[in-house]
Image (tube, rainbow, N blue to C red):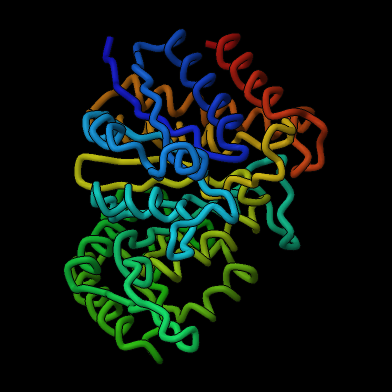
Length: 364
């Protein structure tokens, strides 16, 4: 039996509640598979900062360094800021990405059966693409400042090396994963704003250079404003989308809204040998403790973690476990009897997690 050490961050707001359901599902997987986990709790976020003055406890950096994976709930509380006014959540999120060089932000966009899309006429399977967002550069290098409370600046950094590795990752992903629901083709779309931003001109240039190495994959460009429109009008066209950090942050949230809301959207932060998985939504402090939060994104993040373990460790048991979680979530969503208020139901956070565990253990 293979055992993996998972460093987990319960986070803030709804974080501890949805993390509890994510861990519940993974512990259920231990019962029905050949996998075993050693879960190690790490304190990080706004509450940790209020208690200790550290957004991430110094000793926990070493814990995460030694772990096989990091499993993170949302962090941050409005008003809990550093002396310079920046929310401490940035120290956690950006700190993890930069410290472990998690240069890929992977965000699958899927319309599940049983979940209505706000887009007219879209059916399950018609929206099924992946956004590959560069995760360590762009405006989020946090370089800038305020002059005399009159002028504020942020420096946007795009490098050839950063662009090369994220774009190549996108093409390799396209080669191995599915195809476009629209026409069955493998396609990588570069979303940028090279018409006005010099930094995006470099990103677009590198994209064209790398695309030449993959003649079997269609490559296209779209300006980010036009792409936002296309996400609403023809999302079925897309297969793999690659984009700089800032654009990706915005378009992935819009994408989540087209498939039932970000309560169903998970993401992976992936580097060479290290990865972190999380919901893409925030900590929603006003919902904390109410039992109304949707844990599906947290559970899907665990499923993505198993996918990564399966791929990087060549572990067939992890691949099978990921498939089991995916199928069970689809069953629960299709049934429609168990769903949280964001999806129009009255079920609690715990109800959803328990329903998934019950089906997992009953059918396997």
